[in-house]
Image 1 (tube, rainbow, N blue to C red):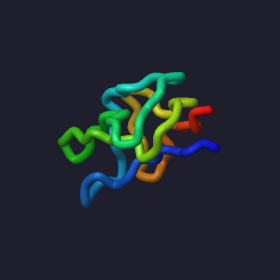
Image 2: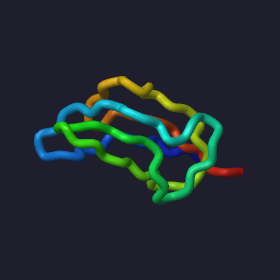
Image 3: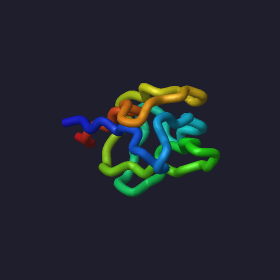
Amino acid sequence: MSYELTLDRLAEEMDYGLVTRWLKREGETVERGEVIVEIEAEKASHEVESPVSGVVESILAAEGDEVRVGAVLAVIADET
């Protein structure tokens, strides 16, 4: 089973966020609670933690992309 990591609203007035840095790449293992990506919003940088453990199956938002709140950033697959 796969989990879609979406961009949550990180600030009150936030509609978009800028993907500034991925700390994990496709194919790498990530643990629940581990920081996976950094997002800039409202002139502040936010670390986004993975809510699940698994393998980064695909990254759908590249570094430098501006994405809307609710957009899928990455897909994390169960480790099997």
